[in-house]
Image (cartoon, rainbow, N blue to C red; front, side):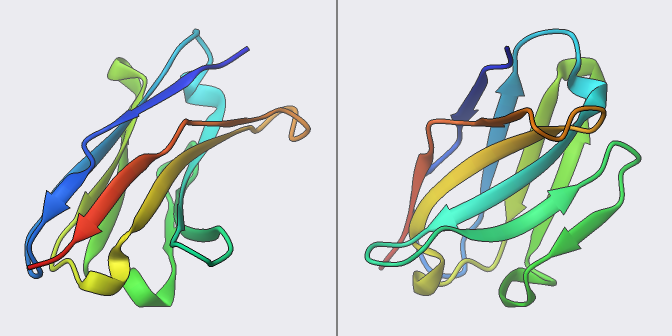
Length: 118
């Protein structure tokens, strides 16, 4: 079992920045592909960014150039650096992990609220 604990959400003004963290328990972090999803009120959960075990990244078009996903294997932590935040970024952000050698094993964090408002 892998537990994901998210932190770093909060209230920020438009144009501001936040860094979300996702700390993973256990000893298999290097075998986890990591994702960040967001879910705005009344909307479906959507993929925001992904990072592979090798460090390759992908982003939703809406966040390209503004958000950066990264990972620190030594700390068993994934991050989402969120810059130039917009009100439409307001959502609950969820960390997600996929065990690359067993893709049936998936884990979700509890979510952290990001609110972008003046």
